[in-house]
Length: 138
Image (cartoon, rainbow, N blue to C red):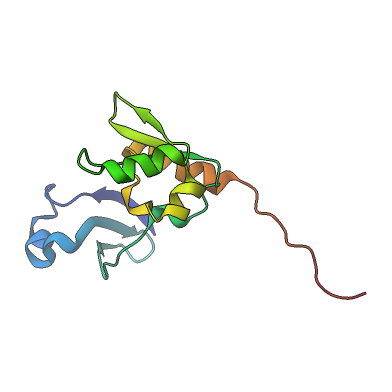
């Protein structure tokens, strides 16, 4: 079987599926079986939605991450400054090592741009996994 086209919701050929599945629709594919001389239409749907913390996939503790603190949160800003935070006037965020951010419970305030988030994710995926030493007695 061969996939000839994959279309996003709203493109010609996807309207009836968009009406049927709504916002759960991710894509529509037309798959062709040359042997049976058949065309199959497949849809990709969102089956389940749950919260996900993108920062738990292995940022190193020394990786600097941008943290948001509102103007009226003076106590938090002082805490961040004491922990070694560096203010970025252009982006209006504090930069702090991830280990300290996690220790302070500020993971929900990390504000990577989508491009930065993708880059950090790929860096974590490329990093070789450490192999734990064997605990077996010889």
